[in-house]
Length: 197
Ligand SMILES: Cc1cc2nc3c(=O)[nH]c(=O)nc-3n(C[C@H](O)[C@H](O)[C@H](O)COP(=O)(O)O)c2cc1C
Image: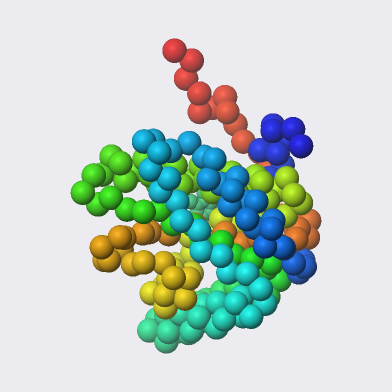
């Protein structure tokens, strides 16, 4: 696939059509991710893979519990919205082939390095998304709060931000087969955001 086509035609998918993804493909996607630029070769990214029906069902149980707990603490209106979101998330997870949680290793005592490491990790995620697109898979980069609740981080195995090797989640990546259903805007305007000096 031509690189310009891949960049332009990779678009966020929020619903998937079921189907599986092999471990080999997931390994290839992560391999592509690790070729991202990173300052001082810190290779700050870490990947936590939720793969297989059992693991995805377990993740769903944790996500549902997180939504239920938040809905219980919220007022009635917000609670109802959270329960609707929970159902949407459960339907999404049921049709998802794999989830890859991408974190970056934090350096809280060096803000500049920390920012660069987040930037490098974002590049790694874009590599992963493009590689998935090139192989015919649909994806979503999510930073949904409910996917990062403490019980979920424990389930993924992500060390918390308060540990001696802190990591933060840069994205929870859903992967699945495309259904053709897209939600995002389809145009961008480079001209409006460019200053020719
Ligand atoms: C850092 C980051 C966080 C995002 N978090 C979410 C999210 O929590 N939920 C969601 O539906 N989409 C999320 N997205 C996806 C964007 O909404 C999506 O990229 C945008 O709609 C543009 O669509 P496109 O990827 O097809 O160009 C996120 C994207 C980025 C880069």
